[in-house]
Length: 102
Image 1 (cartoon, rainbow, N blue to C red):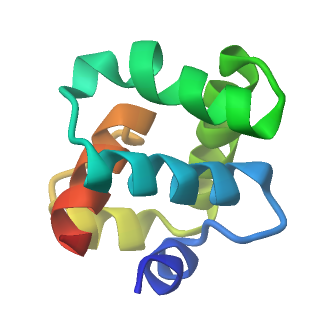
Image 2: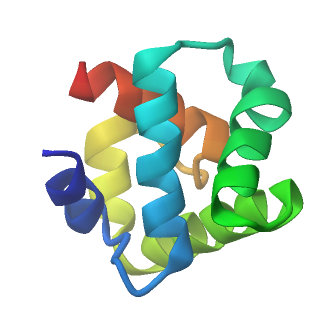
């Protein structure tokens, strides 16, 4: 279901961010943390597992979201609200996806 949702949003597997978002959702579903702690707790765990820096994890997730937003803004608006005018942050998207996939 999570993969289908990401694909519907326009986040495709050809971006590293797609797989990193799946990793983040797995961590957040097993052990929820406050959205403000995602960069301090979740990204470093993914970075260690994937052998990359936590900055690269965040950048790749942001890139996937940005590309998807530019292609499918209507999908994001449907998911967040019809009044969503701005691209969601990585933390906002992860928090919403965790709630949806529970």
